[in-house]
Structures are given as C-alpha cells and as structure tokens.
Length: 179
Image 1: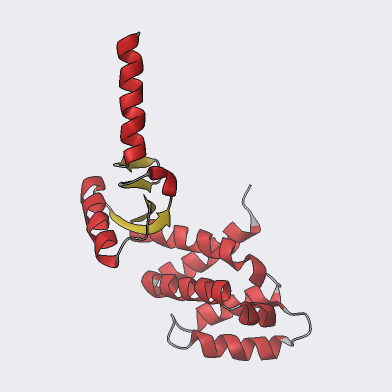
Image 2 (image 1 turned 90 degrees about the vertical axis):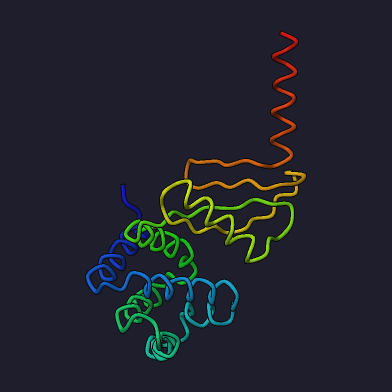
C-alpha cells in the first residue's frame, strides 16, 4: 500500500518529468529539505496553525524564486497547507528517490572514520560509478567502528575496504583453517 508521502512524491516527480526539469526539481527539493533541517524558525513558521496560509505562501514564493518554476512553489504551498512541513524530510526522500530513478542515478554512502574531502568523495564516486555502470551520488557518513579505510554502500552493493572488514576476513580464515 502506497503511503501519502509516496503519493505526493510521485505527483511531483510526474510534474518534473512532464516539464523535463528533473534536475531543477531535485535541486529545489534538496534546498527545501536542507532549509527546513537547518532553520527551525522557518519550519515552525510554515507549520504553524496561527500563521495564515497567505503569509506562508508569500514566504514560500520568495524561497522558490529561481527553482523550477511555479509548480514547486505550489507543491510546497500544498505541503504547508496540509500541515506536512514536519514530515517534509520523508516526502523529500521519496521525491529524490523518484527523480534519481528517472535520471538513472544511484544514491549511496561512503562510511569512513573521519570526514572525507570533496575531492576524495569525488574520486570514490567516479570509481564506483565506473564500476557499477551508472551515475552514483555518495554521501559521507562517519563510522568509527571501521578503524580505518572506507566502506561504500549503493543499494545492495557493498564495497568494503575497511580495516574492520579485513580483520573480520582474517578471523574467518583462521577459523576455517582450524576446522
């Protein structure tokens, strides 16, 4: 059964596809997702029952200038009107997933002990994209359990070059030799 978030996401992806503005919509949705994540005041304002829809719409229109035209603004107005702003992150994930599917882009994660530089992420992204035969977008996630190295996960593909993995592999080899 399809969730309400998925229905909203499919609707916006359909509009983006129809307008042939998949990347523009993706940028706009990511912008709003980050804005609402980082700016609690905007999030509270747009979700408030005490602020009129007209006031919310003015703010949304101002924020949407430069993003994919009026349909993204209308979508955000609908989300505000339906009081779904606090759930926008979940809606945005569904939208980006749908847009990436249309754009033939795979999302994934680079797990590392410390933050990687943009250049390092770019190098890993290029290598994984080439290996998988699709464009990949990777997000860096800190995981100190790895001890060192990196682990890349894209959907159900795992590329593990971490020290933790190598230690586990050595432990397994020793167990097999004993048996």
